[in-house]
Image (cartoon, rainbow, N blue to C red; front, top):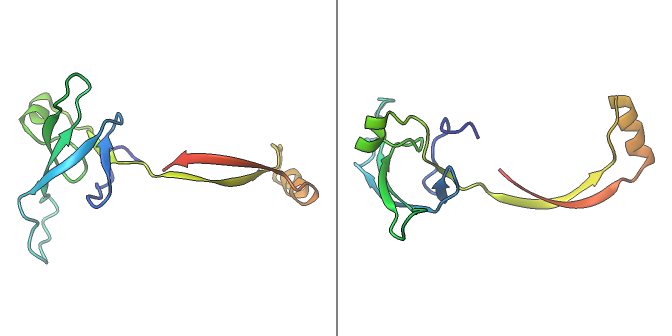
Length: 124
């Protein structure tokens, strides 16, 4: 992810960029009418973010890229995203053939060696 350059997909789970729980409370105002071409328009979203200091958490207004746009963010000139879509955890099996200095060596080893299988997990 290019940290804040992608649009938030509001149909998928969100979290803070440091991994804390976050939930959408409301989208304000209503989206623009069909056919509106003003690229500066965005739907402000009210988001609750779990606190690492107390049990209550805080509420922020964010734009469609996850950047804060409430008074606190504007005053501090925070232009970095505070939320993102939660990374999707994936898992699967891979074949490991080894590390080679050239593409030719790697291709010939792939044919001669059946490889070793390993189970891996990753996020994207």
